[in-house]
Length: 305
Image 1 (cartoon, rainbow, N blue to C red):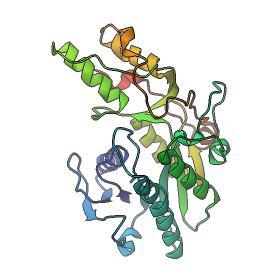
Image 2: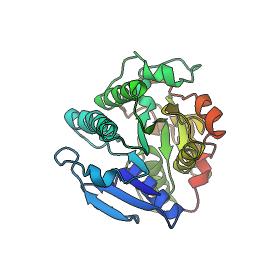
Image 3: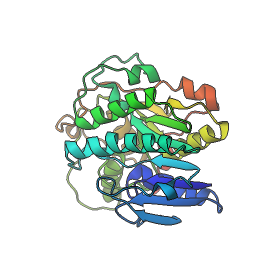
Image 4: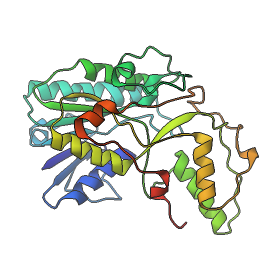
């Protein structure tokens, strides 16, 4: 199978490229981006600036599977312009989808949404289904969520001669993750403490926000099931995983490594989604199609540090 992945060194694109390259010796994994991948193997790298360069559709049409995993604004700690978010999260994938339609592509196209699109929601009882996300009118607090919401709205109305899947993701995590996202941030602190190094006490929000956490290995497995089962084109929630408050997650990580949690850690840091109290996906639609939902626990990525 020939797989084309847009995005090279982002979290999702990196993990997907590595997964498909390692999955089968017969897979050809072509990656498109502005930086050649530095931490995983691939078959071919095509330098592509999605904001400036035309895409080589003659080459792209050879792909059995095209995954759009480029984007901007995913990590709140990385400051990116609103214009960049709308270009990469909305206009570019729409352009690719429509051009593939014009060129009568016959493979599979995959894109991703985010449950941040739900918006300001304070009802703990709701697990949002696909229609509730697609047509949500709840207020969102940043351009990242708006751009992703608009793409989901487009994918819900789109039709094409090829197969397309738009997967709504919750919070995802993976083995050996680095960076400033919550889990690697906490694990980096715990590693320093376990190794006797001095470091400042981390600062978190109140931690009362409830989120859904899915291991990316489960995302990859679910995607391969979608392809194998040849499910109908459309929008699907990647539900399952674990539903925890941010504080519960942090405490669980500290407890795993037997390091005491201090109350002073919580309530002093503002985050861009602090006002969104509950974000939870209903995965029943996907479960009916592939008989599988993510199920791994946070401990699946923990070990000696």
